[in-house]
Amino acid sequence: MATAADRSFPPRLGWPARLAWLAFAIYFAYALSHLQVTPARVMAGLEFGYKFLVKLFPPDFQRWELLLKGLKESLEIAVLASVLGLLISLPVSLLAARNLMPAWVTWPARFLMVVCRSFHPVIIAILFVKAVGFGALAGILALTVASLGFLGKLFTEAIEEISLKQVEAVRATGAPFMSVIAYGVVPQVFSRFIGFASYELDSNLRNSTMVGIVGAGGIGGTLFAAFQRFDYDFVCAIILSIIALIIAGEILTNAVKKVFRA
Image 1: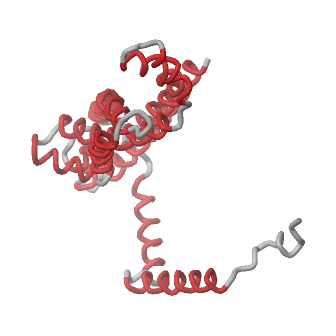
Image 2: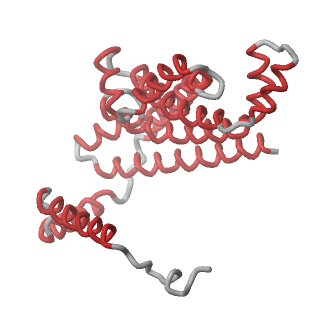
């Protein structure tokens, strides 16, 4: 039985833990000094930040047509990238599941997903802008790659957590491989897949507003241009519109989850 000393809070730390915390504190202080994070610089940043916030208000919605065009393009990029990422990640996740496939099949599939997750979507968007040029196509391809890395990992983990009894029962009937997947695997992971896909759509809505900054289409390009013109009241209008778009996407994804869980 645990004693009162064992249940004390905060818990007593041994020498290894104390040394680890001391090393972390030393490194934290070193990083602050190395990056020149000083109290004077922080106070100066707060002052400039206050002046910037004052310039943002009131927001200017007079160019609402340009605003709606950018939001519409961002929404289209997010939806197309999410659908393409979903369609590609489903077979890749099946190939990466170690409880369904041999090692020589799972390792290449897992390596592909790791590569797709290795870079931020903005970095991938820069590469596609160089490859296919400016515009929405670069944004769609960049977010599709990001979706493959994220959804593929989550789908694979969900498949590896299923009960193999149902899979073996379907196999015992002599069913082909695709029937095993359809009747032995999908029913066990379908609700989780819906949750993952809806979350990825919400994530792509946010990312689609960023890739435009590097020329990959969407409202991000309009935001970047407004910053370059020091058009801060229009910047505020864009930011508020992006927030509204994300909130609408959150409401939509929650509604989709409720429909499939019903």
